[in-house]
Image (cartoon, rainbow, N blue to C red):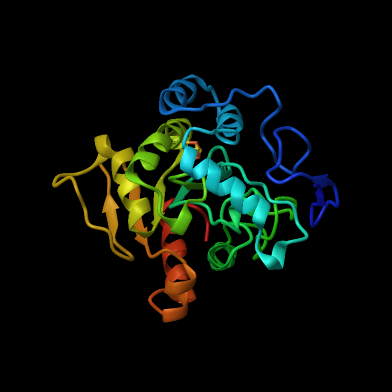
Length: 274
Ligand code: SF4
């Protein structure tokens, strides 16, 4: 059954096949599909640029549990989105291919990124994140609703450590390891321009420590905390930020003002104009 995209009106199946016109779909029907960890590592090692990486990530099927979950959610849907098609595929990084600031989160939400096809788009966490990024002057609009809403940035790139929505927002250690070559390759491609890495939550922090293993001061395992800044020998800086989850925002553990402080600081440290 096809349903119309909420902005473009073009009908799509759920999950969305590769290369059928979904806004921002980086893949074509011929894009190579990784179906096991070895193929993820092999494909990740061979892509030459961000566009090529986004294409192969967006069709990956290497984690059987996550593929089944993302597609099951895409078909069942949440009642509020029952009239929409769901992307139901992995979520690529989003933003500039030459960012000054990398924002690293955990994994897409079942009815957010897994529905809209864009990271942190269409869920409560994304509402808080993009509102803060807009207040900091890092994106062009305060909302992130769907993949055709005109959101843009020159300065940041947002990625999830695990690219498929996991049940209970909890990927297994094996799933994290299977997905890691995508993140590692993305880091290799964007690292030359990146000055600041902001991690959202402890999972993102641990992923960042693995990515930056060769660029950590001794002692090598700085602890995650909100507002913690680690100065790296390369001159880059790693900043911890609580995840803008519904629970953290509802309980006041994280406030909009705290998010503003992090992104204002990140922007200053990245050398971007205020
Ligand atoms: S989590 Fe990563 S490795 Fe696993 S299927 Fe999704 S994109 Fe592929």
